[in-house]
Length: 215
Image 1: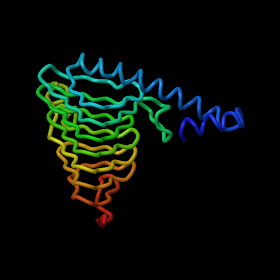
Image 2: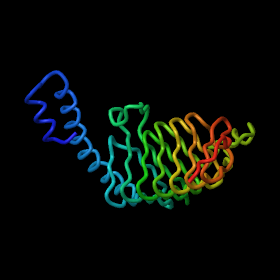
Image 3: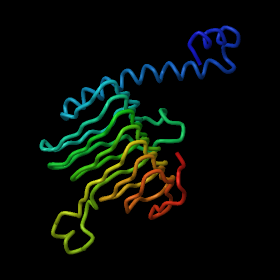
Image 4: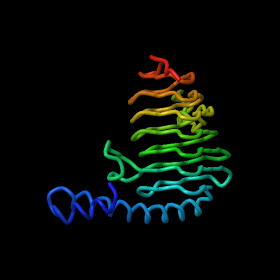
């Protein structure tokens, strides 16, 4: 709805339908402007490369080892505020890269309460969409063996590649060492433990192809 239409409707019926929506819209525009500025300052503080333009709804969390690299392409959107996604976000976006790790995010991607945590490499292509509260992590974080955990040994870590035009439904978890092929869709609440081919719909725990997507 255009601002001119809103003003017209506001004059006709100021309190029934239009005022709550118009107030919310104005608040979101103001917060987005403010949050984007603050987020850019934080990204600069952490030496995160941001292309322009990028919009931030709420303030994400950046963490980067001095030897790591994080590059985020242009026209991306990060939603970290509860009010920014009506499906429900339960946390801020987190983008973190450990020692000698890399995170590369392409252009025109969207993230809502998404965690991207790399100990080695996470590569995300163009036009990738992550539904609310997805997690992408290239390491087990802790060893499977109990003795190794008590000795503070490193966990297994393998790169993740998410190709162009992939859509991850809400609450999807992508684990180490997988590639998700171009144009594929992963259903909500799925856990990706093995690589998926291009142009399919996958679902389940572990996620498996259930249907091809016809071009």
